[in-house]
Image: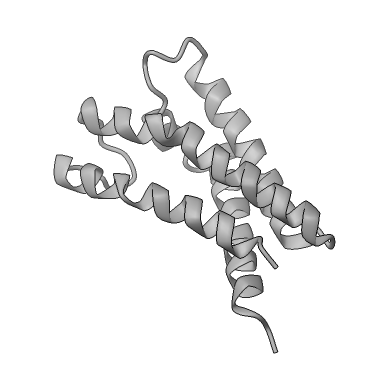
Amino acid sequence: MLKPRTLARWCLGATMAFAGITHLTVARQEFRAQVPKSLPLDEDFVVLASGVVEVGFGAALLTLPNPQQRRTAGELLAAFYVAVFPGNVSQYLTHTDAFHLNSDRARFIRLFFQPVLVAWAWWSTRD
């Protein structure tokens, strides 16, 4: 029988791989809206780099056989979610529409989902 943590890890891995692929393809413009203007890097570079990182996290969560490696991947993914959180805050503060978040209320509510992702990455990679 499939353990809940394993199922949660696989779902998160598939989600990360999908999100990363969309960074690289169909949603590049949407993701650019989340790059804080204060970040001294090219927006497209940030979107492409984060897409590659997300595909890598997805692949790691789906394929790493060693529990310690999965745990490390989960810790790094949790840190990644913390690192990209300022982009979500920036989107809220600058009133930037993207991903159908076209109101301050919707953008504000979204901020509360980042800790859920951190917890999901942390919990699902523990054995």
